[in-house]
Image 1 (cartoon, rainbow, N blue to C red):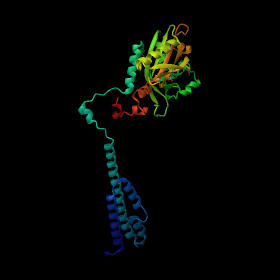
Image 2 (cartoon, helix red, strand yellow; image 1 turned 30 degrees about the vertical axis):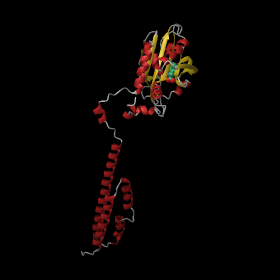
Image 3 (tube, helix red, strand yellow; image 1 turned 120 degrees about the horizontal axis):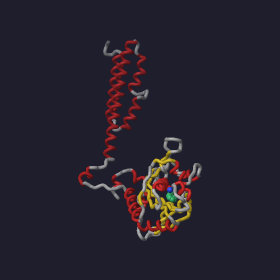
Image 4 (cartoon, rainbow, N blue to C red; image 1 turned 180 degrees about the vertical axis):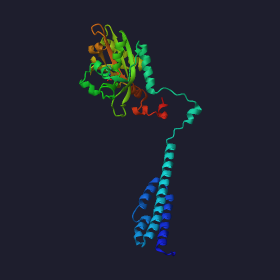
Amino acid sequence: MSENSPVDAMRRAIDTAREGALAKIMAAQDSASLRDLGIELSRKTSGLVALKGEMGKLSSTADKRAVGQYLNNATTEIAAALAARTTEFADQELLRRVENERIDLSELLTTRRRGHSHIVTQATQRLEDVFVGLGFQVAEGPEVETDFYNFEALNMPRSHPSRSEFDTMFLEFGEPGSTLLRTHMSPVQIRVMKTWKPPIYAIMPGRAFRRDTPDATHMPVFHQIEGLVVDRGITFAHLAGTIEAFTKAFFDSEFTSRLRPSYFPFTEPSAEFDIRTPDGDWIELGGCGMVHPNVLISGGIDPEEFSGFAFGFGIDRMAKERHKVDDIREMYTNDLRFLRQF
Ligand code: PHE
């Protein structure tokens, strides 16, 4: 075959197109321009693709096979170069991102800074201290509860309209709807009544769960503290007095509290309680009321002999107020730069 045979001419054209494409691939500066280049190279009018169209001009099958093979090799080579360069850019970009978002932990090692409890843990411990000072004992209960403890025993039989206010997360365990993540701390009231004998002066801090979409003031996992008193001759005045004593002890003697009529299925009468800051602002804190006789009965206590009150409020919100955190979600991203401030 002479130098100027159609096969040689095609081969030279393929070489030129291949080298041009490879040079462009090596010259690309980032993954975006590489992506554009990939599209450009696959266009019908671009070098190798166009040459494929010209194969028809070759006369013999042997020539077609030889040039076809040559063309295929060149195409494969270009695809491999594109892929390699793409990976290279992806690696570089990842490295750059890691570098930008890096938290310098070496400072922690060299200054031997001591860690501290999370602000919600700090708030819980202070709450416990204040209530223990007022004569309460701390009680605990399970986070996975049954329908009975979370609802039924708290005077919310199935189909009670109040149930829909608790966006409950159910577990696939046992009968459908029978097992759930507790939606509040009140089920622990029942457990305490069943195991302790009156007089009961208990507080119950812990995690509760509701199907809330996280936003600046809500998290699907949050913390509450609940109080329960059951004794002879307990009245609403004891409830109001306890809330007031707690407010002054926890915040400051310049704070006061107020109760507003409300409704809870497990207390009767029920109230919301607010606290007033020295500046005169009212902050809503939680719910409370006299323990409903049906709830005492669920706990195995005779409502003719004993009476009681209960209250409950959110701990995360208190920590948020106290530290002036704008967005409650910040408290749970575990970013040391945020947590170290407190
Ligand atoms: N369990 C109630 C809630 O989560 C709060 C509450 C507790 C109200 C005790 C009254 C008595 O909304």
